[in-house]
Amino acid sequence: MTVGDTSSGAGEEPGADSSVHATPHHEVDHTVEPTDDPLAIRLEALILGADRRYTPFQAARTAGVSMDLASRFWRAMGFADIGQAKALTEADVLALRRLAGLVEAGLLSEPMAIQVARSTGQTTARLAEWQIDSFLEGLTEPPEPGMTRTEVTYPLVELLLPELQEFLVYVWRRQLAAATGRVVQAADDEEMVDRRLAVGFADLVGFTRLTRRLEEEELGELVESFETTAADLVAAHGGRLIKTLGDEVLFAADDAGTAAEIALRLIEAMSQDETMPALRVGIAFGTVTTRMGDVFGTTVNLASRLTSIAPKDAVLVDGAFAKELVRHGEAPESEAQAAEAVAAAAERARLAEKEGREPDDEPPLPTYRFGLQPMWQRPVRGLGVVEPWLLARRGKTGS
Image (cartoon, rainbow, N blue to C red; front, side):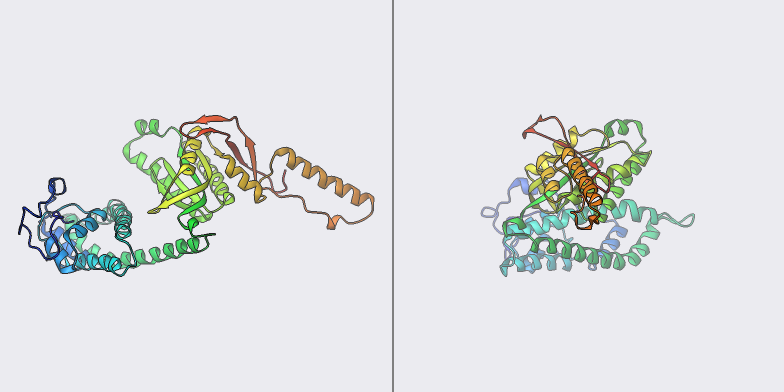
């Protein structure tokens, strides 16, 4: 829930002077009446830990925040306008006070505080919807004939709430520690926001046709299986899952080698599942702008375009990504170079044997994890002409 009147100051009564503080019509045209369902109100009080007490104006005044700022905070968190209904609690007042306090202390600018509210609201909204749709819905099936779901829901939520809250805080702290570690290791201040990353899209081929052929429940299971497998593989191999888009996932990694390993493992895992359609992956390397957990920029757009032209069960990468693999010794510049290295090593071994000495002091044979095959240059919409490279896994000895 959020405020509906954004015009009054913290010390003004609503309607005190409508000629001076007229509320723009587009800000209050549509309001949502808070529910008056008894069970819903009981559950709300249980979850929020407080009863409804304040109108939006009263909450803003109690928190010492202007109605304008309070309204922007609430809308950023994703809550609907409720006009001036008495529907807010002490927890709402405290949240307003905390955000405003961070601004007043100079720890956050006002736009940054709004971003904090928006990013937190968007993330937790999705989490809450998933928990209700996929978790609580199944658990609240009436265990005995004659019982209603409403009779089961309240005690179940009462038991689960503290455990889920503690787990949420734990995961958030872990993720915050990991993200902070990545930032402080950035080469310079600019890289903290605009960083050089490998960004990849993995896309299920023919998903639109599947939506016409499969039942909704089957389609949901397929998408869930794909997202779960992708999320596990990305995390296990050191990448970060940025977001899922049903038939597509977006991931990022700090280096090209990690991203290449993730991409090939995704292809390998999906190809082993007969229920899954083919997968294609596109990866690009370069400067990426990060905002609210998402990534933006030309590098991201290029990765998306590469995905759209990638063959089935294959990985296409851009030239910058290929150069990164070569620079770090993860792939040869060409298959000819790899063959020359093998031939040179064989010749050194032959000479050592001929001279009756051990070849222990000879340079080791280069070991490449990945191979790169140049593809035909082609124009890519909005990005000009690019030369994609086909990524593949190599053997253990550069062969």
